[in-house]
Amino acid sequence: MLATKKKQTVIKKNRTHDKDTGSPEVQVAILSTQISELTKHLKKHKKDNHSRRGLIKMVADRRTHLKYLERKDKTRYNALIKKMDLN
Image (tube, rainbow, N blue to C red; front, side):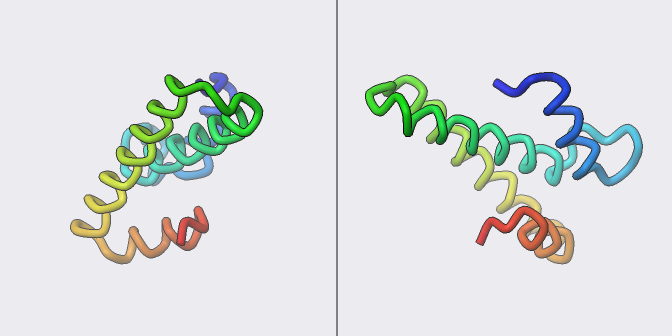
């Protein structure tokens, strides 16, 4: 789980307007941050299979959001991929 302050900074960096908290860009950014933190945890705790399952779910959720954004608005998708350095 992300700390509230860290989550707020991720939202501020990736929002499309002032009150944006749920756009695909913000959701992908939050999931990417959570994935990176969980990956660090799993490198230390190799046998934590419950957290590994959560990581796999987060990766699938992020992929779903990216597919949606690619289907709806290709330019926003390309900008997000470039900004988050996902490919």
